[in-house]
Amino acid sequence: MSAADASTLRLALVGNPNCGKTALFNQLTGSRQKVANYAGVTVERKEGRLHSADSGRSYAVLDLPGAYSLHAASLDEAVTRDVCRGFYPGEAAPDVLVCVVDATNLRLHLRFALEVRELGKPMILAVNMMDAAQRRGIAIDLAALERELGVPVVETIAVKHGGARALVERIDAVAAQPHEPRVHLSEGADLHAETRRLLSLAVTMPTRTAKIDDALDRWLLHPVFGLAVLIVVMFFIFQAVFAWATPFADAIEAGTAWLGEVVGGALPEGPLNSLMVDGIIAGLGGVVVFLPQILILFAFILALEESGYLPRAAFLLDRLMRGAGLSGRSFIPLLSSFACAVPGIMATRSIQDPRDRIATILVAPLMTCSARLPVYTLLIAAFIPDEKVGIFNQQGLVMFGLYAAGILSALVVSWVMKKWRRDKSEHALLLELPSYRIPHPRDLLIGLYERAMIFLKRVGGIILALTILLWVLLTFPAAPADAVGPAIDYSFAGRIGHAMAVFFAPLGFNWQICIALIPGMGAREVAVSSLATIYSLSAADDDAAIQALTPVISDGWSLATALSLLVWFIYAPMCISTLATIKRETNSWKQMGFATFYLFALAYLASLVTYQVARALGAG
Image (cartoon, rainbow, N blue to C red; front, side):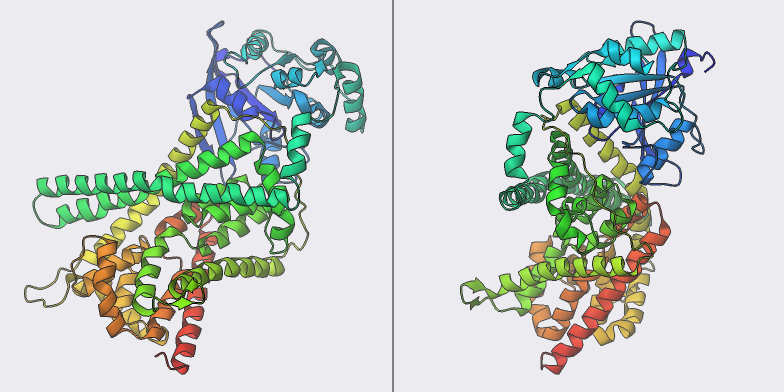
């Protein structure tokens, strides 16, 4: 490597998953980092700036995706391999590779370090989690490792303040006097044999695993008790995402309403006023209101991942999920989608296999999110008697049936996709079960900040643009002076609704329902207030709208129509936010288009069957 200007020296952190690499990256760069995606793929790219207080130099630090081998078996590993070799399009080759290994698991991690060394690039081996190794009585002769590997070896403690000082000193030394590794394995050498030789020379390990890990795993990986613990943990997370976010979401909605009133009062009546209040401010509010759920969900996911429990949860559920064509890693994203599909789809980033990740993204919208509840509550209250069926409430049973239908449909859809896909091979779930550890607050806060910015930047633009488009459809043309019906009836959306009624008549939908489906694309729960507007009812909120609408629709609609609409909302992707998130997370209009098509097709067919069967049974 030629001598590089210190201000432009590029460092790349590489290592196995769960080696503490990202925590070390946070230690080195702090808040001086940015997150994006690699060009053309959904793999996350993290780059930060390191400033050395001793030398005054600044470095560009790249946190590469975790990899078990440079013989890539996943998209993450392929990106890491190509960047390390300098072959990735649009990505400058790193000047120095910092290979991070877990001091408590050198048996696995050293093999990858040998692969990285064979690239022939300047390299530093960072032996991380040295504090945990010392507590377990593991002795590592760093000087012997450095002598045998022929590369600088330093110890780090990524979760401790100043735990990367020795690494920064070595980086400064490399910047001042670049060098090449001096030892290479012969062609075709056995990396496993070389790993065993290095371990025998430099590492003394009382036991292969920690006693506390073994004790916890006896319970947490138990096929019965372990599943019971997982159910309790997931139930708590689900309740927290649903309940804890409510006050913050209410505050955001109140703030959005207040801002709308202020801006609306400052501007004269007219299209500009409506655009600002009903289009832009309401659109931005519709984006930000999801943020509390996302942050709470990811706080739990990051904590579970950092603690070492998340891989164990995936292991417990893999056999069950695999039968439906998914992965054990699909469980948490699908569970979180009951609160909101947007953070659920974003949570699929923990799924390494691209095929399983796409399958999970495509079925996540079938989980019954909280936005469906206002519609379910309205229709159940209007058409299902509040009576007992044995010890159960009849309305509660219907609500449970709607949730169960979504779950079963997701399993059936994923199973069908498994049968139809070209790649029939089974991708085994390969997981390293890391040692249990307490998550560091710094890493959790940085991770939450990154995900908040990803959501607001990547999803917000699309949602805002489509919300403004919906505003245009609902606002223009204005109702004539002698109009007797609601203004929406004269708008483009109203005309579209009347045209849609012909197509949706076999489902039992009238033109009022069709019109309500249009603004309902912005958010499913908006369909309730839209129905109230269409029926010329004045309601301040969804609860009031439900109370006012209940007698109207119970008298004007048949039971068959109500059941058909309930089924429609189980399947239809009535949420721009969800579709925008699918586009951003898959980086593919094709995947978003497929999801939209198959969900609408399922909704239409299921509603058609429901309505026609209900009519045949006398409910029409």
